[in-house]
Every structure is written in C-alpha cells, then in structure tokens.
Image (tube, rainbow, N blue to C red; front, side):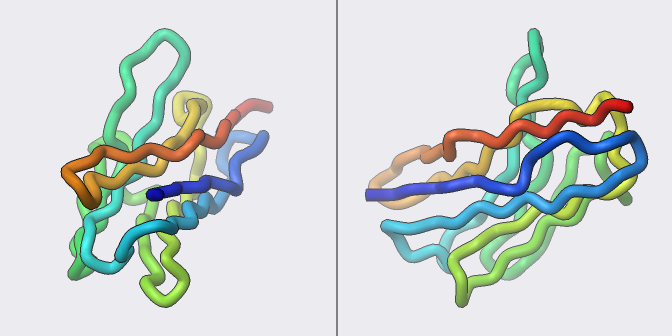
Length: 116
C-alpha cells in the first residue's frame, strides 16, 4: 500500500533552518507530483509547495524565497528545505500525493516549531 513517512521536524529558533524529508513507498514515485502541506493550530491545512514530475515547483506566497522543494526519484523521497524560519511557520507539516487508484495519500505529519 502507499506509505508516506515524514521526518526532520523539530524546534528551531527564528531565522534558523530545517530540512524535512518524506520517504514514499508502495507506488511508482517518479510519475506523480508531490506536495507539502502544513496545518497550524486553529487553522486550515494549506498547500505550501508542489513539485511536478518534471521538477517544476510552486510555492505559497508566504514561503517564496525561503523554502525549496526538491525530489530524488532514485530514493523515492521528496524534501522541503526551510530557511529563515519564522514563528508563523510553526505547524504540522504533511507530505501528500494524489496517487494511484485515484487516491489521496497523506503522511502522519512532522511538527515544526519556530520559537526562541
């Protein structure tokens, strides 16, 4: 079955950096676009970044110039490099794919906390 496993979250000071990873399994990773979403307390889940199969990228305005999404098809892994982190980036970050069998698949999430 499709599995997405995130890692790399944690506590970081404002201005710091983190790199999130999402390891995928159970499907052909390279033929699907991949997303990172986040959900802050009391807010709706929002799309943060997307990378297509041909490595085109899109970002929500609030993270442009600070976050970078990338993928390694040899490792079936998608990454989110987060720099210049702000307190408002605090959220649970989720990996997502609209994948095989018309399914929408989510990881379990990884907590990112930006605080001094």
